Image (tube, rainbow, N blue to C red; front, side):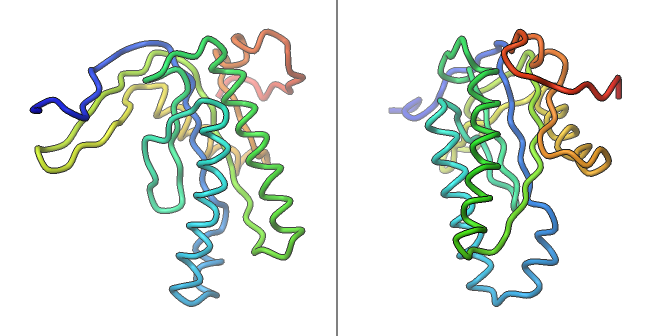
Length: 175
């Protein structure tokens, strides 16, 4: 009973996807509170469905951001491929929603691969699964760097290596 619901701590290479909505403060300021929450819940529902279809695990919703892990806690030898496929589908699906008359939401996505520590954290009454490490921080920084580079999806070098030339990419140098 005591450990029920806990996931044992693990460390392994994983691919981390971090996505954030562009200009959400501007969008939210033009909507009523209920409309903001309806919009965010619709967005999170779409993003979560896509991430789960590709074997990812969402570890956190924060504001309008989503943090997801591929290959941790569940093993996935194709984690880099699945994270990129999820990112591309998120971008495509948001474009479809905008063409269907929904509020246009643009996202920026950072993807990084490397060693990640994952496990259950919290207190006796509230537990949650989370991931930690430089790879998580790098994915968040890549998401932010999209602003500067006018891109939508940025990958780190390790993720590009794991993709092994399966995808055409454009280099942006060392940052």
